[in-house]
Amino acid sequence: MTSNEYIDDKNPFLVYNTPGILGCREDYTVKNEYDLRFILYPIGLALSTIFLAATLACGFLLPAAHHVLHWRCQTNYVLCLLIGFAVLCIVQLHTKINLTLCVILAVTMHFFTLAAFFWLNTMCFNIWWTFRDLRPQNIEKSQERCRLRLYKLYAWGIPLLIVTIGVILDSLPDPENKLIKPRFGENKCWFESEKEKLPFFNGPIGLLLTINLILFILTARELTCGLWKRELVKSTTERAALGRVCMKLVIVMGVTWITDVLSDALGGPREVWYISDIFNSLQGVFIFIVIGCQPQV
Image 1 (cartoon, helix red, strand yellow):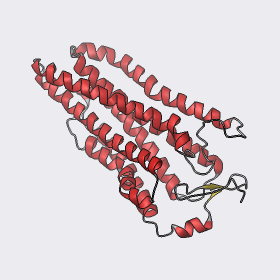
Image 2 (tube, helix red, strand yellow; image 1 turned 30 degrees about the horizontal axis):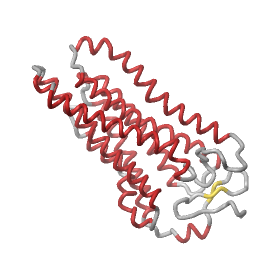
Image 3 (cartoon, one colour; image 1 turned 90 degrees about the vertical axis):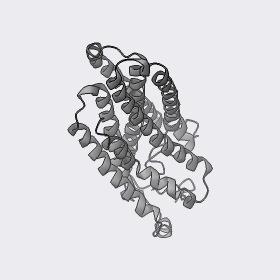
């Protein structure tokens, strides 16, 4: 093993010089053989995948005629999370992955996880826009298709742009390591370190969560100062329920994102972060509770 090939407790994958092989160092495997994380984390991811699939099924089974646009955004959001968690579960369950496949899995996780946050942002924006301008239902339906196209362009297009830039940078030669790029597959099937993760993942997500918080503040203001004074009580109640669902989703995803950033930044003994790691792996279960257990949504 050359001097630039290494592995530590936070990077369980190591790329050997043999073409296309991604493996684990023997002493690392023995050292962590009884590590509870490597048992509970894949189980949590598998449960999240199952519950996200159930959430998606509930969305199709329950009536959504009153909120078609919101339902479509929510469906795309859950679908992105489902694919992201399924791929992450595959990575966690395999200690040896072909290098090319490793990069493909990393890019797939990157794209769909980013897209999930962007779709959540469209849901928050849609709720704010609805409270801000409560127009007649027939006008909303006439504009629904156009708005959905714009949402798709935004929620699929920007993640695709970010991921494409990362893939292009990864393909460029960088012998002196001066470029900031994802470095997928260099020592694990994800970003090499927090430095690479910031501009391509944590930065955009942090910005989206901040925007969502601002939208919630504005929505709460409209809810307390404007809509309750109007006569469309039934519509207001239904839309308020959707607003609460979006708020809960942002809290769940925001907490998991913050704990992930803190664990990367602060480091320390991995035992300290066991609870947050398990919580993150069960994110799909919490999302099912928020969405799947809301019949009015």
